[in-house]
Image (cartoon, rainbow, N blue to C red; front, side):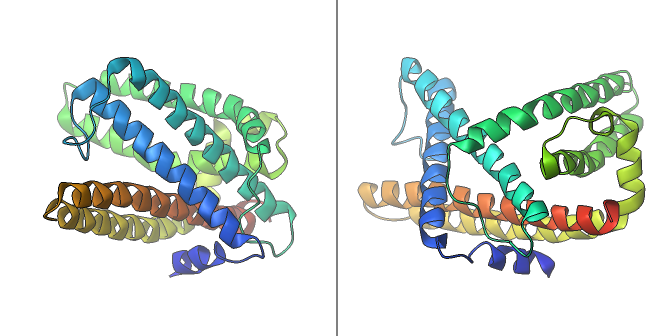
Length: 252
């Protein structure tokens, strides 16, 4: 599968070890921070027996988690920009604070398209009385999301705000040119995500069954960090595959 090749590409480059360790650390801290936030507001978490921070700490954990999420989002689009503009380069970029700037560039595009999605979702509210129509409409919005992501990828090519980027009709053009390629790639991505979810579930059950409470804590924390890291690497492979589709089917 192409997704396996894209994942393999993520482990190339002279600075790859440092980059991978940095991403692992960021993903681990983000996952644990959000888990602590969940524990604070609901009283439960993936390791609820061990973590139940006070609500006044939840704000700190939430801010930390979202800060890392914002950074990794900017990092992803910086990666996409490199795939477009640096010939034959497929490895991950170096860790840099510039990723926050990249996120700020992409955010207006996300905001506008978020409004479009909200409008479509609002239309769906009028269909709630008919379960079948509501399901079909919801499924349609779900199918549109990866094609909307192609617009974000197009923007990341040069980070230029153009009418094409904000025009809703651009979505129809992208769908027409790339529909089957995106669907086939998404099937691979879903299979990859299912495998990771199964591994996380297996690891969690294994850790819970350990005899020592300390061993359980170490095991569950490890699963949280490793799971978040694997999901992020799959996400990078997704962006690599979608960028390849964009280059081959839309922009050429």
